[in-house]
Amino acid sequence: MKLRVATVWLGGCSGCHMSFLDMDEFLIELAGLIDLVYSPVIDVKEFPEAVDVCLIEGAVCNEDNLEILRKIRERTKVLVSFGDCAVTGNVPAMRNPFGPDNRENVLQRAYVENARNNPGVPKADGIVPRLLEQVVPVHEAVYVEYYLPGCPPPAARIKEVLVQIINGQAPLLTGPQLKFG
Amino acid sequence: MAAKTLIIDGKAVSAEEGATVLQVARDNNVAIPTLCHLEGVYDVGACRLCLVEVAGSTKLQPACTTKISEGMNIQTNSDRLRKYRRLTLELLFAERNHVCAVCVSNGHCELQTLAYSLGLDHVRYDYVFPKWKVDVTHRLFGMDHNRCILCTRCVRVCWHIEGAGTKNVAGRGATARIISDLDQPWGDSESCTECGKCVMACPTGALFHKGATAGEMEHDRDKLEFIVNAREKQQWLP
Ligand code: SF4
Ligand code: SF4
Ligand code: SF4
Ligand code: FES
Image 1 (cartoon, each protein chain N blue to C red):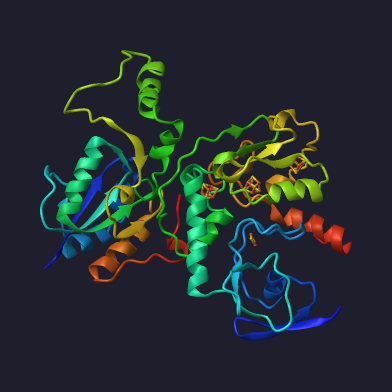
Image 2 (image 1 turned 90 degrees about the vertical axis):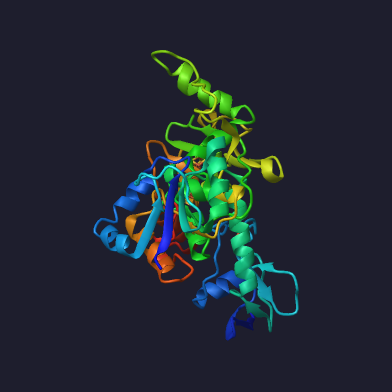
């Protein structure tokens, strides 16, 4: 049976997924080795049940991130923090040091102070998710099995981790493959 | 001076009295990780990365400040030590804001290198996310407190190699910080000679040349070694 693999994009820049696509011709081989059941690069709306492995890009920044992450944890055997934002909080977490009001302040700064046209913080209940008080790395929100750091992780590193997982090994990065930033 | 014999990682070695465990280990090609140690200035035992096990003592000892003694039996790389070293590094990461992706020192950082060597792929402690300032008032250099690990290398080179005495430590515990003169903006410092030795000495991206962008800052340790060699051995070797 092929592994049921998912990838998800939380509070990140999508760079990790771009790097995933950078695996080039290995993607064709990969398509024969796994079933991609949920991902920003395929058109599935609801995170499915009984997923074997999920790569999670991005930090946990808003209520929507947190909700889907909890659902993913329930439905997935193995979670991999995919990229520095997921592993450390990275750039999205740079608002945290601005204190308890940071979410109001960053929205104010981005959508009002720096807006040339139509200043105003976007608000639409049920559509625009509320920011969390603090951005946290994925493993501060749910249990995570493995870590794949890098900003973004180069394609070779993603491939190495995927191959190890497909071969039934616990992925382990060593030497130049273990790197932040 | 009298010679002492001791055992490091099962190997019998001898060295002169007064040497530190770290010196003897390095002379015998045993690598002990260090962060606050810097050749040419005295040791302070601040970072605790160099902790070793000494037979007969349950307390771990910092190799950089522990003097050798006759018959000492030292372990430098046990599972227990590796566990503590990783833990120490994780706490260093958690207590300030290290965003490697946008850091001037990314790829040339001693904190990163050590973390990788101990297999650190994530930090198990909750990040503190403290609020720290960046001082870019100096004409040539910048200081980002978010990346400072308080190793005090900058302080020691500033006082004891340059002799300027600009850099100091203020505060205690987690709020301790590196200051210039009497806690003034670095650019207002009257004692700073702009020699740049603190920048050369810094193991992280905390001190940097202005204008360096992500990953561009390489601390020129060779220059510092050159000066130290010249001072201590009267050797002017390039
Ligand atoms: S100082 Fe080192 S560990 Fe800290 S952010 Fe910069 S590169 Fe990363
Ligand atoms: S540039 Fe030189 S004098 Fe100025 S703070 Fe650094 S080490 Fe001290
Ligand atoms: S500024 Fe650099 S050299 Fe000075 S204490 Fe901080 S990390 Fe160490
Ligand atoms: S190198 Fe010995 S305590 Fe830092």
